[in-house]
Length: 135
Ligand code: FE
Image (cartoon, rainbow, N blue to C red):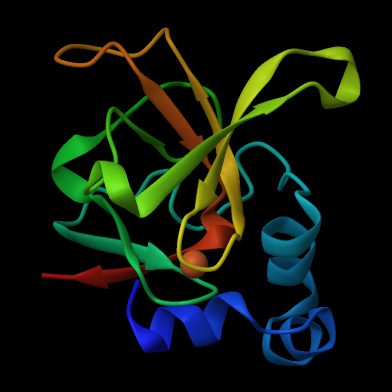
């Protein structure tokens, strides 16, 4: 982890609250889920890179994005395995795998094993946790 990333990870809750929009704060720091089909990237098909809206780390690439029909941006793999951390999540009476930005600890979404080839994974990610930059 670079010094810059370490600084991101060490931000206080108060700092996150002041730097993020209320909507992004609820998703990234409180693990909220944006309503299905509400996110700005659900139907984004442009070529580019999706970065963490909290810290700017590159998380996903448009080449791995697919139409899942779920209402959230869906990817079959992260840009690099090291960019995300997977955690067991038993909230809301379900057993799921939470996807977190490794650099800043921001909640991104969940990953399921019903995705397409080549990985069979479906990273179901909140638009509010992402910042898209077109190539
Ligand atoms: Fe981050």
